[in-house]
Image 1: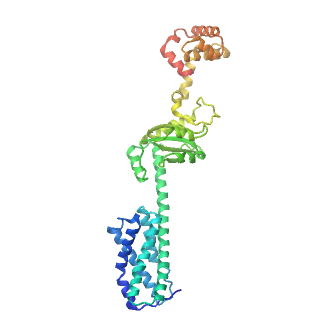
Image 2: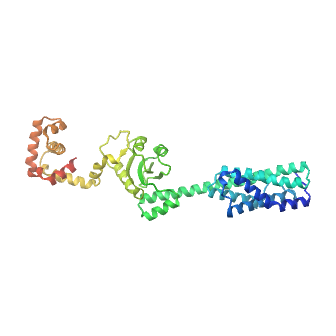
Length: 384
């Protein structure tokens, strides 16, 4: 351990000069570290000046102490003060790089001022060199403590913000009142977009989508409990890009909705995945709910659809299963092709005369119902 012998008179001069040293250090930081320009005025500036004086005063006390202490190791209060300074800087939004730069500049300027006092008091070069070594070692220790405080604050605030973002996503999918959503967005420091689009997908695909989606995209595990599935709420989503990025039929993209109505987008995407839509299950494309609006409407109440289909086909109940299947298939084609015999025959892969014969059978079974607009509507929905 380096020992320093200083005349008490020199020590007293240095202690009395600490306010000027602190002022010079703060001025140098403002000039050399852009992040601190305009930030060290008012109360914050006073706090920093006080911290510099406290740190250097503690060092001087250690350096000239008669007991066997290491002046390179700040005392508990000094390290605690530096740690809290680091946390405060993180809360103020300044980066660790800015904090380290401030320490470098501040240490250099502090030493320049202290060295001037020593030279003015006639202290020999060897003692000044030893003093410099200890000053910079001491300031390095304080710098490390501040960096630890900065890192801890960033980690803590990051966890807290993520919790707030998760709470916001849950609130959006729960469909809570707009006032509560705005409050949740404010807590999460999340700037509301114009719209949100819900995307349901396997967790394994989420990373690829997150890379192309907006930075404010919210991610949450599917509230329905579907294992391995997540929900992304994408702000002002580039729909075509999302559809190109997703792979496989286990993904679905809901409609864009005002951000406070994101639940509606999620519910539609969820229904699309739950329904047996007319898709090739081996297809590599996700479900685009905008391309299946009619199917979603028709299949929104499966029991009602089954009841409607049974009622529409009631006139065929007395036929054999085979005849009933052929006539129901013909009725469906006849409705979809608006009675055009050639088109119906082509759809059923039968001769037009066969279509004519079957339509005759349908007219016998249904009578005037085939010309009733209400029945035609119900039959089209039930069979289409």
